[in-house]
Length: 335
Image (cartoon, rainbow, N blue to C red; front, side, top):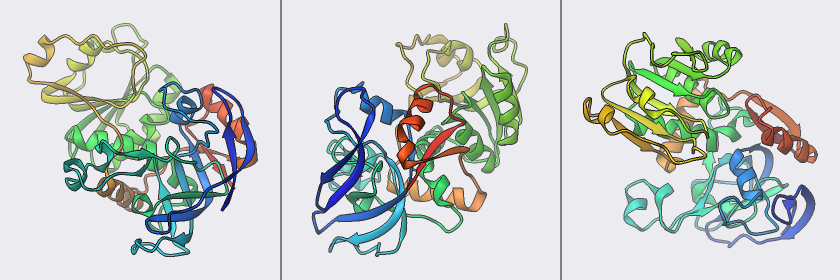
C-alpha cells in the first residue's frame, strides 16, 4: 500500500510530504487509519540521529491513535473498526524469558515503531497487531496518543518504584512527563510533592493534584525542606540533579527513579543510600499488560494529558514548538 507521510530525509531535516510503499505481512500486522499522533522528544532525537540508530527517510510518530482498517490472519483480539493506540514498541520475539514474564519492552529483539518501520506522521500505520491496544471508551482519541509513550513511561516508573496508594510521592519536573506523573500518582490516592524551577508550573501542579510544590531555584529549598519523608521520587527532567539532596528527602527503603535522561553523568554519593537503605533506579516504557492497566486507570480516574493540537499539515510548526520546549505540555497532530 502507499503511505502518505511526513518524513525526515536526512539528519536534522524538516519534514517533507513523501509517499512511501509498504505492505503488511498478512499474519500479525494490522493497518491503522491514523486520526491522531502525539509528538514526543524521542521523535526529535530520532530525526537528529542522536542515538545513532536512525534510518532515512524517517517517518516519526510513536504515539499513534486511529481506526483499524485491516487485520492479519493471526490477530484475533482486534477487528476492523476498532479504535486503538500504539506506543514506542513495534514488536518483540514473545518467546524469551523477558517476554514470557511480561517484560516485552525489555526483549533483546524488540523493534520500535519509528526505528524499524514508518511511524504515525502519516495517513496510515502498519504495525504488529499484538502491540496495538483497544482504547477504553472514556479515553478520548486526542488525549490517548501521549498516554501511549509519555503516559506509560511515568506510570511504569511509579509502579516499579513501589507506588501503590496512600504514599508520599515526589515528582521532579512539571513538563510533558512530569504533569502526567502528578496526575497518575494523585489519582491513585497519593500525596504528591512537585519539584519545579517555575513558579507558574508550581501553581499548575496543584490543579493536577499535587498537594504542595517546591521551587528548587529558591536558595536552600531542598536543604530546608520541611515536608514528611517521601516514599519515592520520580525525576522526569533531562538535566543533571544534585542527587544527594533528593535522596535525603526519601524515607528508609525509599526509591528514586529516573525517566528523564540527564545530559551528563550523575554523581551519586553512597552514604545517603547506605544509612537509610535507599535505592536509585531507572525505568523505560512498560510491557503490554502494564499498558492495558495504565489505560484502565486513565479511563476510570479521568487521567488525561494537557495538550496542544495541530493539523498534520502543520507538523513542522508543531515540531519546532517541541524543540523549543514551548508546548504546554504535549503536542498532538490531527489528521
